[in-house]
Amino acid sequence: MLDCEILPGLNESDDLPHYQTKCQVILSEDEADFRIQQQYYLKKGMKIILVYNNYYPESNKLEGNISRFLDLNGRDSDLYTLLRDAERQADVLIFAPLPPEKGSATEAVLDRIRKAARV
Image 1 (cartoon, rainbow, N blue to C red):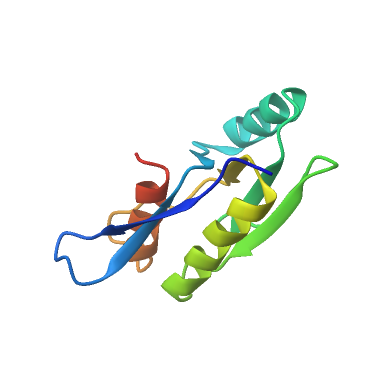
Image 2 (tube, rainbow, N blue to C red; image 1 turned 180 degrees about the vertical axis):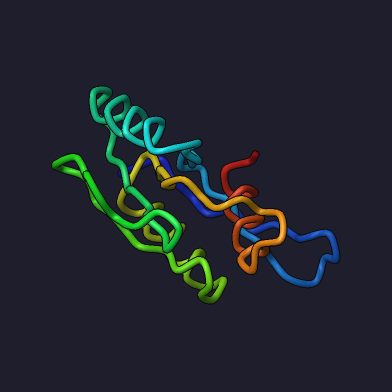
């Protein structure tokens, strides 16, 4: 069994839970970093899930990886489903490059992804 677990927490207003995971969550800085992260964790024999998004769609995926698509304009529950899946299927969750947060319509989802990565 993989060492992953979703931990409930409270947001600043203490009214709704947000989730963090014990799986390692990596936010790629750019395309080169995304590829380097994949290669690094595969060489270590770790199970990884690649998370593509509408800003960075799936391309050049290395063999043997599980991939998911996260609609950054979608519901928050899509992110939480993705985190729960990672708990059961992976050691590491690697996010493809994300759009800049400032002024983005997806700012809330990006903030939750960064919290999951503890950035």
